[in-house]
Each structure stands twice: as structure tokens, then as C-alpha cells.
Length: 267
Image (cartoon, rainbow, N blue to C red; front, side, top):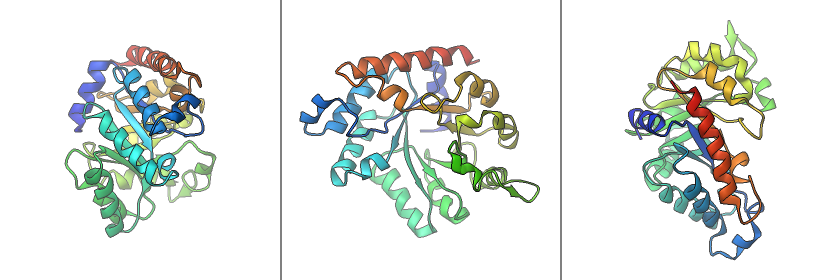
């Protein structure tokens, strides 16, 4: 999906919501366990209930890899079911020497039809570049994350600034705002003003709203640009809104609350 297509979806749906399909087989409703593929059955119901309210889905690959072959099959079926009208993110946090990243890029952009993949930048340019060679595909590079461990490296002094600032400035030269995004955690809201100055035209994938306590209002006011420029991810708050047979209906209600609030912030 190109940037133009993504922005069109945002404007059409009045939403910049990304639904995280971090599907844990131990947390889905018990009755689904009788299905041939319980995880896909759960995902399918969530997608059907939320597809008109969001512009993106993010699949955290760890939850699928943990199930072995069955997990990969569920992930592949899910990404195909989502289709082409939503921005499909593989939250895989890959990043290795060039020839290894080449293979990761093939796995997620050729073998599976993802639009984007999250990437760790700390092995340098040659570990990120392979993900930037595909037309209409994106690398979403870790910028400033919302976990406590961000203090260990990202927020440490590096030269005349912080390490995450150096990452943003350096990585932004490897691609363009048409194929490169950054992960910026919602719990780092006070940093968004500075981050937007460093990368004025890029999109940000923003996790941490909802279950992790980030403020959608605060993020929206500090991080938006003229194209919106943010995809706000909510996972547990939506997909586990209910543990019962009404899980999809309740997921829709929460997603609708996000969409309605987002509509009010969009220009």
C-alpha cells in the first residue's frame, strides 16, 4: 500500500486506528477451541467486526511463531483474509546482516502479502535497506519505544543528543516518507513534539494507547502532520474487550469509540 492509498483510507474512514491481532490462544473464548483453526476463527471474527472502523491491522508474529507450523498457517490465512484495503503490518522486529534481511523481506513481502514490517535498526543501514527495496512496502523502524528498557539505550546520551534522536535522523536518510515509518510509543507523549521536528513528514506507528495507558488526545495533538502521520495501535483493549461469545461485538464497540474520537481530531 502506498502512502497516498493509506492517507486516502484515513480520510475516508475518519480513522487512524490500527487493530493489533496479538492473538493468544490461551485467551480466546473457549468455544472457539472446537474450530479447526481457533486463532484464525478468532481473528476472522475480529476483522469482520472492525474492518470499517480501522485502516490497519498489526500481526505480532511472536504469538503465531510460538505455535509452530499451525501458527504460521493461521498468520498466513489471517493476512490473506484482511485483503488489500487495510495496511497490513508484520510486527516481527527483524533486522540482521544484509543477506539475512533479504530473506526476511522475501518472507513477509513475497511469501506473505504484508505491507510493512517492524525493524530493529541497531545493526545499521545494511540490515534495514533490504526492506526498503520493494515498491509499495514499508519498513517501520524502532524509534522511541514505550517499554521500561528504553532507558537502557534509547534515552542515553549519544554525542550532542539522545540515542533515539540519532537513530531517527540517521535512518530517515536511508529511505523516504513514502516507505519508512518509525515506532514511537504512546507513553512517550512529551517527546512527540521534538520527534516531529526531527522527522516532520514521516508516519509513526504508535503502540501503547489503551491497555498501556497512553492518551489518544495527547498523542493526536502532538504527533499529527498534514497527512495525519500516525497509526495508533490498540491490541488487548479491543480484541479482549470480552472473553465471552460476544467478543466480536464488544471489540467493535471499543474500536468504534476509538474511531469516533479520532474523527474529532482529524483536520
